Image (cartoon, rainbow, N blue to C red; front, side, top):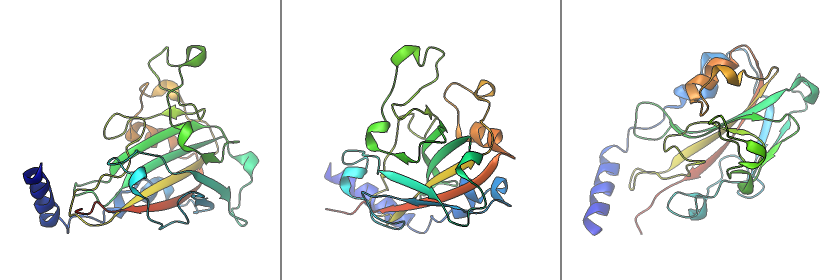
Length: 214
């Protein structure tokens, strides 16, 4: 165990400069070129954007999803009635890989739902949901594929790699996406293809976490 930990720490130090792939985040893609950042996202549990998540939020702890809430900005340029669906992507641009790590993809979030709680991130198989291979969550929305094939992957930076930032990106659509044209467990790429031309707003909350030697 001690040797494995030291090896991980050594690799973290070696690749400590490989980070900051912000330009490859979903909300930095050409899909958002003319779309304003007009949604305010906050975490009543953790704090404002830029706050530090704790061990319980990490994959090393309880893997707890941070409670998120969002509202339209006063000068959003859109009204709540314009929104037909929300999406949420969770990405880590500081992972020592070429593109941001995908920690969560949630779609078909009802327009009336403007918060996600930890208890929402649980499988829902009631009333025949999932009969076609799709996965629904108790929050009333669909699950997409993340890097581990789980409901949610909390922070788990490489030991010694330094602090990582986790971007929780809320996206508002003026049209519902056509789920029939995607896999039952849609990938981030499939969802991005479906939302082209449908985005009318977005916002982001950034949570920070570092895996320290202890």
